[in-house]
Length: 218
Image (cartoon, rainbow, N blue to C red; front, side, top):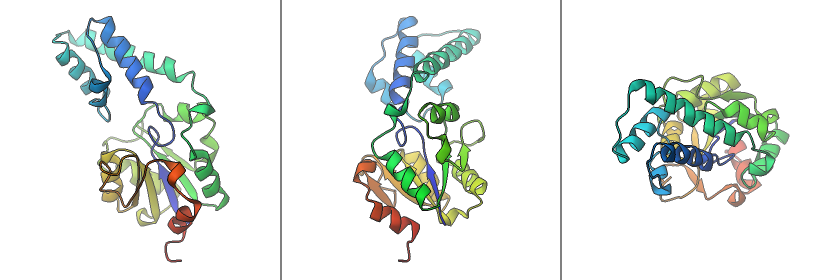
């Protein structure tokens, strides 16, 4: 038996668009233009640091109290967007892979920095697949620190070397590698070149490949 650990955003679902909409709404409300290009610079960046960047781009200075209010506003905007999520938001062939792993009695975990991961999995009706869920509420060190994946392995009662991680971010691949787990990049091979394997998305991943991950010595 192996443990398969999935990141959430960009691997199972794509909530990046909702972060963008929430940041854009906030920025426009305080008179700052906000572009998709700027949003790319916020991926993997904390909410605090993201707001600091937006204020810097807009050359605005605000009080600590205003800063706190804006952070709450952004999160509320984001939560209102993800409230509408459904199964149609699951990325292509993710359900196929989860069903296959489940049919093979493999352990499955989520390892995500998102503090809204549990709610999102419920919205898209995938919670039933997961033996363990480790999210941003349970870790103190962000990726590329391996804490989130090591925690997931522990909750599955698996050794790190028996775990496989699916990730779409460089920091996540680095975290998986640091944990001595097999790393599978989902996305652009030129960006995720540190991964053991890279696929554009799960539609490119055959069940034969999954079998090789389950039984690497065959």
